[in-house]
Image 1: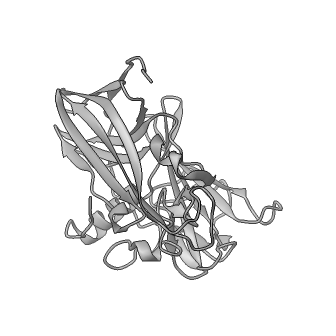
Image 2: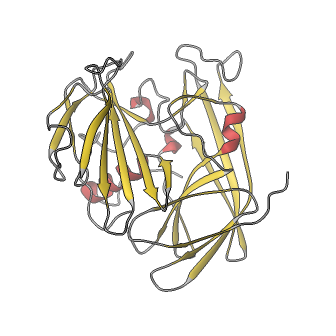
Length: 301
C-alpha cells in the first residue's frame, strides 16, 4: 500500500520528542546547533522468534512468545537498519546515536499481526513509533530520582512478572503488555521521579474498580507534559491533587490485583503539540540508572 509523504517538522526541545510515522513520511528535526536531521521511514517488519502458543493471539497461562522487529530509516540520505528484541534481556536497550541524534526505536505496528492489544494501550497509531533527542542533551533537563528501589545491576527480564512483562512483552504469550512490570514486595515505596504538578487515582478499589491505578503529571516549561502511571498500588501516602516534590514517597506499590507475583506496573506517556504518545518506561529507568550508577551499567541493543 502506498502512503503519501508528509513532513513532520520539530525543533528538538530539552525534553524527549515522541513521534509516530508512516512508511513514506519523513521528519525534519532541528538540533541545538541549528543543524537539521532529516529522517524518512522506508520500511518496517516484525517476526516471531519463538512461541509456546498453540494459536497466536490466544492467551495461555504462562505461555511465552519472543519476537523481533525492525525498520529501515533514511537519515540525511543514508539508510540505517534498526532492530530490537522483546521479551528477552535485549528489551533493555541503548538508543542509536546517528548524525547527532539519539533515537529510541519503540514499536512498529507489524507486531500486532501476531499480538493482541488486550493488556493496556500500547499500539502505535502509525507504522512506527520513536523517541528522539539531540544527542548532546539528556532526556530531560534535570536528573531523575528513582521511581522505586532500582534492582541491583539493572533490570532483568526474569523480574518482569513471570519473565515477559516488559514494555510490549507478550503477556501470556499473546497480548502486548502496555507497561513495564517490576517485581517487588507489597508495600515497596514509590517515589516521584520528578516534581509532580497533579496526581490522582483514575481507577481505585474505593471507586469500585478491581485495582489501584495512579496517574501523575509533570508540566515542563517548554510546553510538554510527562504522564507517569503506576498500577497495583497498595496505597497513596500523599493526598490526591497535592503537588509532590521530586524524591518524595507518594505511595506503596504492589499487592493489589498483582497476580502470580507481586509487582508494580509502570507507564510513561508524553503529551505535546496536541498528541499523547505512549513510550517504553525503560527510557526513564535507563536514565535513573545512569545518573545513580554511572554509564558502566550494562544494557543491550
